[in-house]
Amino acid sequence: MQILLTHTWARSAWDLANLYLLSVGAKLLGESAPRIVGLSEETTCYVSPNYFAEDDPFADFIVHEAAHIFHNCKRRTIGLRETRRKEWLLDIEFRLRETFAYSCEAYACIVSRAKGPARRRELAAEYGSKRRISADRVDPTEVASIVAEAANARNGWKVILARCAPTAKPRSIAQLARELIAARDIGDHT
Image (cartoon, rainbow, N blue to C red; front, side, top):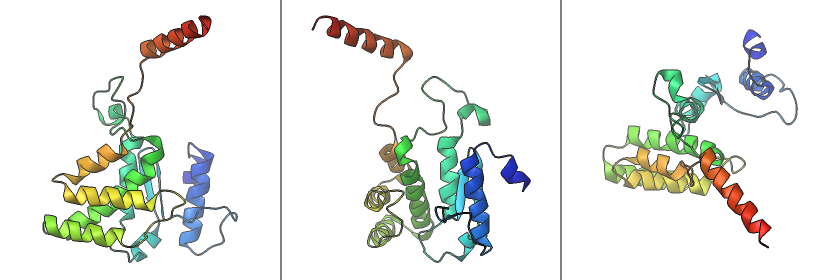
């Protein structure tokens, strides 16, 4: 109970309570309650015992939840230097955070089972041949594409990072101010 009361966000406490209830076969807190087996908040991961009953050879919820730490943890938290442009361990596009985690999960399973590049490609094709994740949270086709590209690369982890990175660099305050002034000046002349 204490763990639920000390959560930073009420939504996380709600999700964690439902994760636990689901794991013991109890009634969930509502019809809209998530049916999840893992949850990450900042640098802490929770995984239900139901995880260990999963029989999909491409599922590894520990890797999935740990992948979220890379975009949830600031560099300074673990003693790394932080700059204006490097605040997080990995810069992952917000809308692609689940895609990143699912891609890491599947690729980790492939790497652990494959003895070489040809086998990685075979396993990636096997992964992509069947819908394994819900389209409610991510685009399964995009995840399969990322995993296939990663399996073809020498360093698949870099591929996953590149495919899930923000497409535009964050603007500095000075750049934002220049753009606002330029937009205002254009508006004044029309």
